[in-house]
Each structure stands twice: as C-alpha cells, then as structure tokens.
Length: 291
Image 1 (cartoon, one colour):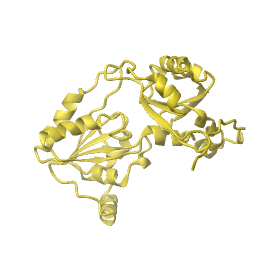
Image 2 (cartoon, helix red, strand yellow):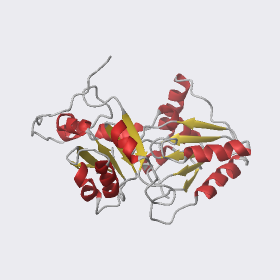
Image 3 (cartoon, one colour):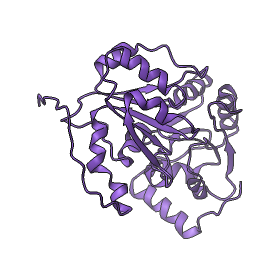
Image 4 (spheres, one colour):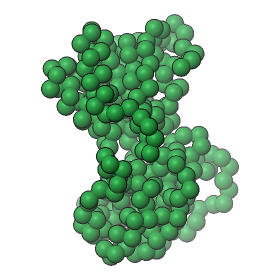
C-alpha cells in the first residue's frame, strides 16, 4: 500500500515519548500483539504507538485505521492479514505460523489488531502458537469496541442506576454460526449485554433472549463503525434488533439494556455536531446501589 510517512522530527517525538515513559525496547526476534482500538486512531495507546514506530514487519487487521500505518518506520513491511466474516481471508493458522517464521529471522514483528487482541480478537490463539514455538512475545492491550465504541455512542457500559453487570458476547463462532451459548442464563444474569460480530444473527439472538424472559420493548442499539468518522447509532428495541441490524455489512456493536437510554443525554458527538434537540426525558429502571 502507498502511505505518507511522518517526518524525522515527528519520529523523534515518538521516541522521546517512549523515553520519558520508560517504555520497553522492542527487541529483535520478538512479536508484539497489540490492539489499535475500535477505529479512531487517537485511541491507540502510547505503547501501541511505540510498537508501530519500532517494528520491522506489521501484520494488520481489516479494522485497523490505516492512518496508524503512517507511523511505521521507513522500510517497514506492511502485510494485510485481515479477516472478515463471509469474505475470503487469511487462514488463522497461516497468520500464526507467519508470526513464528518472521520472528525467527530476527525481525521485530507487530501483530496489530482492531480493538483489544484478547477480546474476541484471536490474539490468545496467536500467543499460544508463539508460546509453543518458543518465540518471545508481549501483549499490548487496546481499547475494545464494547467499551470505547459505546462511549463514542454516548452509551456507558455501566452506570450505578442501570446495571452493576455487563456481559460481552460474541455473535458468531469460528464456523460463522450462532454459538451454542446459554442464552437463558445471560438473559437473567446480565442487565446489559454487549454483542460483538452479531449483526447477522441479531434477530435470532433477540428471539432467544425474549423467550428467556427479556422484555421485548427493552432498549437496544446498533453502533456501526464505532468511533470512526462515519459512525452511526440506531436506537431501537430488543424485538426490533434484527430489523435494525439488517441490510448492512459494516462492523457493528449491539447493546441491550437500560443504559442505552442514557444516550439521550450523553450523545456528546451529536452535541459537537450541533445537535440542539436538548436532552430527552429518561425513564430508567433503577438498580439499588449497595456501595
């Protein structure tokens, strides 16, 4: 891919930041598994920034904002290793073995993934391959979409008046089908449910939760392209979640629970865009706070 690299002064500033924070040296022969956040390049961590600017090879995913790749050092090799449901993509085993192979050549290898590498990101699978091969690695956590993406939508993952529990669920398994999950326990045990990669099966999930006793009129939202400039938020109800999720292949986070109603007052991006509707009245089901 073609890219405009940052200049020498900007590169020196990144190195100065790494020195001030006493960040670890990216040694040759190591693999760093780093999260790039949900989309906004500003959500990269300082350690992730340091990793990008220090690596010899970057294997990056489809959800990584390519603006971050401009921070790579001159001569660094960039390899697209993205995976998208329903599309031809790299096999996970090939990606994992490539990490081992290039690291053994003495390269500083960065595996750059959207969100957090250990939250539905296959980072643990890659780390296990590295561990079995005796390749040293470091995990660099990132902002996961289920927290950062919701924050950009004005929907808090937790709030003392709505929920003391939040559950993260994947919406499809390795085979692309809805995982065999105890939906009844989730329906009864978690006031707020955040679903990753669930757009395709949203209607089926909603049916399972309603059958388990969730209120069909409960607030829900579909956050597409979370934290990106083209982010959209569709507020709906649990019974209509399948309809709200249909007709698009863009990445989305689905959220179900009373905390969705807080968006009426916490839509800070809408406020920045000049949304002058004013706050809407809230009707929350209060959770008693024992603290």
